Amino acid sequence: MNTADVVIVGGGFAGAATAFHLARRGAGKIVLLEREAIPGKHASGRNAALGFTSIDEPEVAALAREGLAFIRGEASELAGHVIFRPSGSLLVASAHETAARLRAQAEAQRDQGLAWWSADEIVAAVPVLRDARLLGGVWSAGDGVVDIHALLQVYLHGARAAGAVVRYRAAVTAVDCHGERVVAVHSTNESWSCGALVNAAGAWAGQVARLVGTRSFELEPRRRHLFLGRPRAAVDRNWPFVWHADVDTYFRPEADALLLSPCDATPHPPVEPVTDEEAKLLLAEKLAAAFPQLADVNIVSGWACLRTFAPDEQFVIGPDPEVAGLFWVAGLGGHGMTTSYAVGRLAAAAVLGENAGELAHFSPCRFLERRDGSVTSAAFRQ
Ligand SMILES: Cc1cc2nc3c(=O)[nH]c(=O)nc-3n(C[C@H](O)[C@H](O)[C@H](O)COP(=O)(O)OP(=O)(O)OC[C@H]3O[C@@H](n4cnc5c(N)ncnc54)[C@H](O)[C@@H]3O)c2cc1C
Image 1 (cartoon, rainbow, N blue to C red):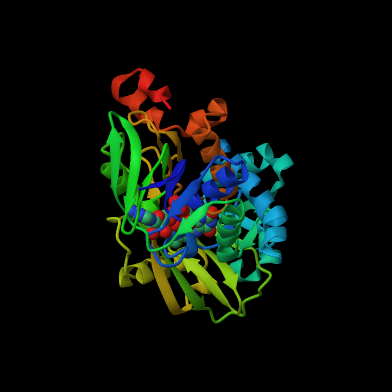
Image 2: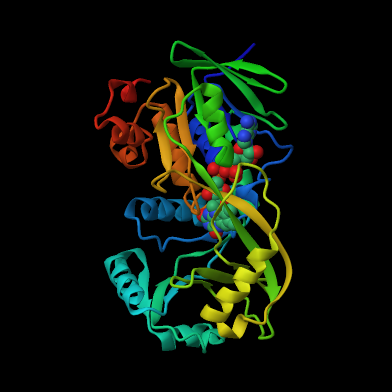
């Protein structure tokens, strides 16, 4: 049996960023186990690559701003090239109620770089929105497109450079507990005795929790499609990312084409999803309603991937309320890439027993509190 201080299950953004912070902080022997032969085979390598901070939950928006600052700065230095294209983003509205809410959000976060744009300002920046009957939108100048594979490698290289061990083709298949404490982890090829296990298995985090024997709460993976398409109108590579808040669909330039999503959110078992033709029809319907000039887009390729949510759709970061030595970094939904640096920092702090205040909002203990109406002392066991 090998020995580790911390074993991390999953080499997506959640696990890689946690390994990066733990290793850099000298938290002992860190081992990351990834089931696939390459990193980023699932959500972390197949998302829309939007560094997006126009988020209405303040706790998540703060993590996104911290994450994007890292991507623009230190991550680009570590990668050896700029891994961020500052396109800006527009969250647009056509309903009065939505416009009022977004306008209030823009005003409240003016000092964070958000601004309210009129429909005329939006059409001047993105002429293809001329027929969209918009009332306005939130402009976020600091947002942009991230080289997600480079970012994932920044975390994995950084973790290895600081002494972490990263194993691929290493599926975690069993976890040993002594009493209610994690003591060892078994993968397809090796076994590790450990003091802490970090569950960063994305859509499979529920399965890993069952290996440990904890059932504090259920996570729900939801399938979402992305398509690459060419509209008849010419695409300007400098357009921002545009999300229609009322119709719920988005696009951004990808070279001479557009990356588009129908923003589907179909509950799906934790298996790699296949592309569903229905999603293409949904996209066509939504484009006709939201962005009529893009309704004739010719779809050239597409893929589907899983976003994973906790019951209250908030991130889950921190110690498990029932099993000592088990830590969660899961349920990152649709913001796990942008926020990854901050999520990894918080997860590392949780493993090191720090920062209880900042972690409270994301703690898995909230599910236990809701079940029996009080916090059990087990919630604070390390
Ligand atoms: C279509 C789509 C678009 C998105 N767009 C954006 C965006 O524009 N901006 C943004 O910030 N976020 C976006 N997201 C969200 C973001 O991609 C996710 O929040 C993030 O990638 C989740 O990272 P993760 O590490 O939790 O999960 P994953 O990337 O799924 O990583 C989990 C890893 O765990 C491994 N694993 C599972 N079980 C085991 C096991 N038993 N043993 C070993 N390894 C195991 C898996 O192989 C996998 O590699 C999008 C998501 C989707 C699906």
